[in-house]
Every structure is written in structure tokens, then in C-alpha cells.
Image 1 (cartoon, rainbow, N blue to C red):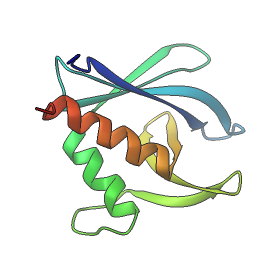
Image 2 (image 1 turned 45 degrees about the vertical axis):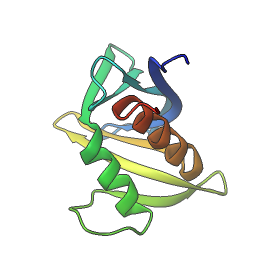
Image 3 (image 1 turned 180 degrees about the vertical axis):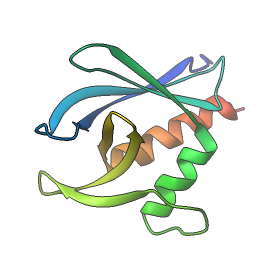
Length: 122
């Protein structure tokens, strides 16, 4: 049986700087078997390549809570985007905000696949 090495999901990140129009950019969520407790969100802005690292378990808690499974501090939510429910996770920095958007079903599938990295099937 082949062991899964990594899990990826293509998402959209909405970048917002004060005084500027929102900009949608493609992004990728990535989780690797060498560090299965870390999820990386990677995207390119006008000036630089950005990589944000999250605790997989903490991120999973926030996304699950946003879907209605409560129990943790929440800064994620479910919104309508292109007439489809999306998970929305807002990241704040001094230079602006980034809102990560992905369809609810895609996030659920991504989290299921990252579980296989943490606890490989026997």
C-alpha cells in the first residue's frame, strides 16, 4: 500500500489593504507527511510570495466550529461566495487582511485527507 505523502487544496484568498480595492488571488493549502501537524497557506501578492503556517489541529477546530460544531475560540465563519457556502478564515496583519475562502465540502475533504497523514490507515 502506498502511503500518502502530502495533501493540497487550491483556494482563493481575498487580500484587502486600507484604501485599496479587494484583490482575489489563487492560493494553495498544503500539508506534508514530514510535518503533519502543520498546514501551510501559500499565495503570491503584488510584491512577494507569502507562506503562512497554522497548527493543523487548531485550524481544524476553527473550521469545524465555523460549520456549527462549537467549542473553541472562533475567527472563522461560513459565508456565501459565488452562491455556494464557503469557509472563511480571516487573517489580520498591520498592512491589511487576507480572507481565505474554500467550499465547505472541499475543506471537509482536505481535513479528512490530512487525518490520513497524521494517522495512516492500517
